[in-house]
Amino acid sequence: MARATGLADRALDLVMALVEAPINAIERLIGRGRMPYVFLAPNLVLFGIFTFLPIAIAVGYAFTGGTELLISDRPFVGLDNFRKLLTCESYLVPGSCEESLFWTAIWNTLWFVGFNVAGTLLVALVTALILNRAIAARGFFRAMFLYPVLLSPVVIGLIWKWFLDRNGLLNVFLQMLGVPPEIFLLDVGWSRFFVVVVSVWFHMGFYTLILLAGLQAIPKDLYEAAAIDAATPSRTLFRITLPLLAPNLLVVLILLMIKSVQIFDEAWVLTNGGGPGTANTFLVQYIYQMAFAGDLRLFGLASAASVLMGLVLLVLTLVQLRLGKKVES
Image (cartoon, rainbow, N blue to C red):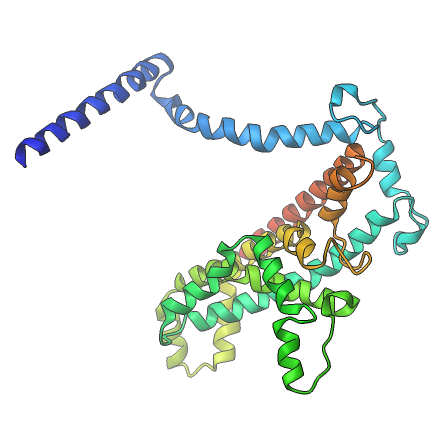
């Protein structure tokens, strides 16, 4: 046993020596102060290839036209794609716009963002407050709320689609109560409602974890002092918990806004591509249809829409961060 341990130690020393030699050579060449960049370089290269390079390609495509795939084969059209997307008689009436489907997708996305952000934030906050209390099987419930986040969005869409189908579990339950079956996903109101419900159910576990971490970081002595002063639960919530939880709430709000604008997978699967009609056609779906699903592959128009979406998300994030700094100060 001792001999095996000695061999393992010598093998480990040999491996460390082989790794140490090039590291020491690089350190002598560039200096110790620049060594952190050496260790960061592989991640930065991958990040540049899979993040910054696609952004640059999308921006380049946004100024080109035609249906060819290679950017070298595409004619330069300047701002024509942006002009086409933004030309409207009235932005409140998508039918009056040159690219009416784009503005339909924008208004659908804004509608979804409003309800999804409010619903997810409220449900995640209430769930975090409950899970932060000393309840039975708290660890089990924390895991259960997080479990849907681990599933694929396509799987989530298929599960709920089966649940809401005409012969699905929900209609079976309604028939047991004497209620006639309803084709939920072919009704505009019901389909929009369930797209929000599915999104809230799917994502709330992740945001609950962020808020739960913030709740556990609040000093317990503050609550003990509030109890001594006979503060009511509502007063404790609004005077202690929520103010100290504000940084976590801001993070959740920013992430929720970005995620909500990018809604695609589960909504696409659940509503058969945005139906009924265009009731659930969202902005990312419009980009996908223009670039990959249409008869004509309008990469320039899709790229221009994605650039506009990215700029809006950037502005919203900066505004929210600015407001967050004012709240903290």
